[in-house]
Amino acid sequence: MIHFLLKRLKKTVPGTFFLLFLCTLLSAQRQPSGHIRTENGLVPEGVQVSLEYRMCKANRDTQQRLQLRSEAGNAYTIDALPCEHISVRPFSNRQYRKGVETPDLIRISRHILGIEPINSPYKMIAADANKSGSITTFDIVELRKLILGVYTELPDNTSWRFVVASDKLETKSVFASSFNEAIYLNPDTGSVATLDFVAVKIGDLDLNALSPTPAPQRRPTSLSWSLHHFRGVGHTLLVPIRYTGAEMLEAIQLGLRFDPDKLKLKGTVIGEVPGFLPENFNLAEADKGIIKANWVLWADALQIKPGQVLFYLNFEVKDALPEDAASLLQLDDSLMENIAWRTDDQEFSLQYQAQGKTSALPEMLQNEVFSVRCFPNPGSGFAQFGINTRQGGKYRVSLNDAAGQRLLLQDLHFAGPGEQTLQLQGSEKLPNGVYLWRVWNSTHKLQGIWIKQ
Image (cartoon, rainbow, N blue to C red; front, side, top):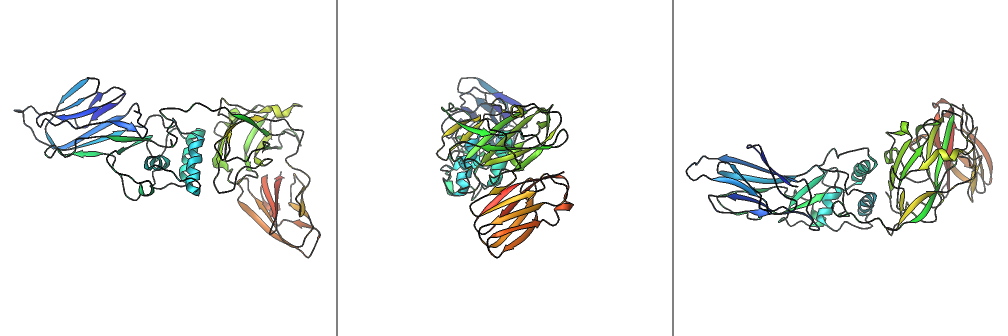
């Protein structure tokens, strides 16, 4: 249903679903009319049309009136005075979340990276979630908050925007100058007879808000984790969430549920996937055992690779864990559908794949050039690193916070193949917590976790 609001008269005039709204100045016998439709011709519900007018003069002899009428024949006549200037402006703040899904974030990401530019000026407007007049990663951040439930509405935008249909917008220059979102009438000239608007659902680039696409058939792919208990009640339990499927992924969304009677979530720690940061999560209901996560490609060629740790969950153990501790954490589609996307838009259903008791803190990590042992781990003083390399050169060791921000950096030089031990200066002063270490040379890198407690 669409409503008309007459400002100054303070009246609301309802219409029908397929609305044709008519503004009739009876004295002049002119009938400007128009439609409100989406780019693909559908009619949104709950739109209001604001009529504002000024410079009105009384003329009781001619009984001039402003009349609104719907296509279905419901007529609403409101006594008014003839006016020299009238503006027509639709608006709607209904259902911000409707039609906004992870594939829309994929479209915006591809546009930003130049992989697949957006091909419609109205979709460009839909992608501008923060109403900044440009499309950036900040728009992805805002829409992700809608998808994860952090936001119920966008702080800097409306749910819908309505563009004057007669404006000839160009996709490449849609933000170069302001476009019209109201039509201004002058009854004396009668120059505007058509009041058509194009309705744009913010965040909905796939145009699914009014015509949802049926869910495709999804092949399964997998995640794995192991809750391997180290110390006991009150200590840290670090759980790596690892992608164990065979496909390279462009996006992923997760709904996870854990037992809050056994575990307390202290936060997340960045894993091996760049950009999987705290802003990619909704942890507002972590006290109830609920975790939601969403990630889309944010830089070219940085896809999720098979075997990578997406992120770590940092728990405090509240009670003794059962033998099958991995069952305390589960994928839950009722929180959010657990789906992964490939670069060709193929969708996959995420499922848990049981693993053996693997540690989030392996004693040693290695690649084809060098190996690294971080010790003691967990530890209470310095973080120390034993590095064994097959080739000489400069090696760098850094310690980072849970979001990947660098805290400490120290260099180590090898004249040739060999082994050295480095005591990372400054690590003894850091507060207890979970830290991400990285060791790299000019060609290779290793990273892992150090727990200080």
